[in-house]
Image 1 (tube, rainbow, N blue to C red):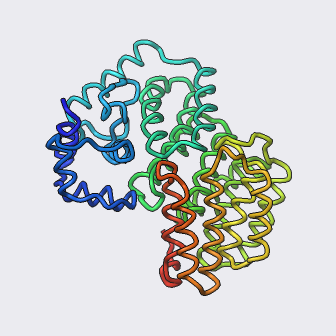
Image 2 (image 1 turned 45 degrees about the horizontal axis):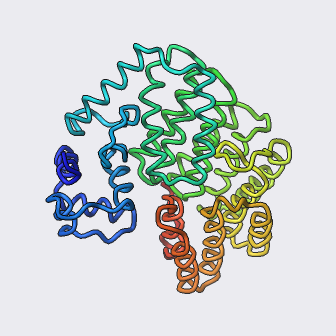
Length: 376
């Protein structure tokens, strides 16, 4: 089967027209694909570039290896119904699940090693790549959930998986965050229960999406344990972002002070893992939060502190800091300059390193003040 035929099969399996698929790609990734060009893909006249293959992988819920013709059965997605995907894909998905059950699957220690690897790779890889890989792991771990410790593994994998979808898409991101919380509860591990809720809260709060969910998950995390931890820190900072976006400055500043105290007790030395909050990352949180609050002096100080220790291997986070400066310009009244500054920062980062969060931040910077008074 050629790449064009596969794209057509996956598209029609969802009941999508060519126009619908083009719109989905352009809306999700900010591209300018045309229906004519998609037709040329499907007719085998042109092969999609690596850039578009990654987007098709994410949007059509199929591993990149499948699109490239190198099928890896461990990497098929788990969160789509068989009726919504091509029969061949559904067949391989079932094979992965049953084979994993028959083999017994990796040990708990092996799973913890996998989690550590994903935590590090998430910081530099694109959402589409992480999504296809983590989805394959979810196929495997779901067959081992008679072990309570693996509910903890599954909850953390689900949290990473959720972060590959826009936070404003409640049918996906929020759905997976809630499932992650429920799975962590099944594990009985307090640290996992707090962490998955806190990580979801800071992810959604930073994106400025689903603010009601931010509050619910953050409040749950704080109620489970008030012991200083990275999970609690994420929960508090996520709730602070939600308050800032609602215009509740007093609550946002109070929570920011709480977050600083928790960081002093629980901040991590690990520099390049999604499970870590070192000094530079705390300052990335503060940079955006204080920019949203109009505290220009505090935001600039946070940006300078973050830049001092930000690893050179993580250029996406340097782009975040530059875009925070664009947000400050926009909030000060010069929206045209702020938007241009932020767009320039985005353009300087290779497209394959763009994240959903950066695109949502770009939308926030270019939005009118009235558009910001929302509560997802």
